[in-house]
Length: 86
Image (cartoon, rainbow, N blue to C red; front, side, top):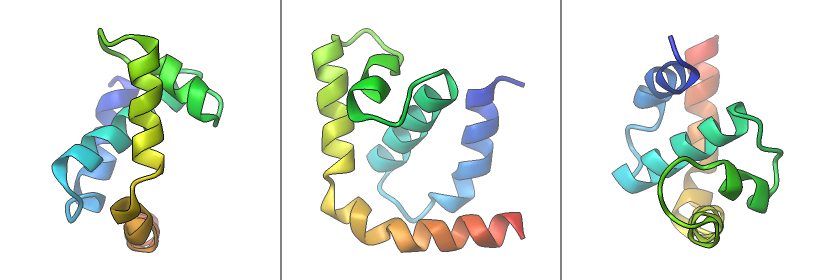
């Protein structure tokens, strides 16, 4: 099974309370890291799949990381991941 499918299946229930766009963006960013991106904004942006230009992909990651709603939900996401793996 491809890494993207495994990641999506694992994160589906965990990310359920999040807005659909944030869910998709988080899964895409995770997939970029799985595919070899280092943990920097520009590297993740460059490894995103899709037809958008690199500039727009980097902007997408920047918007995701700066999203206040996502920052408020980080502790909930961590709790749900911990519950899932224990």
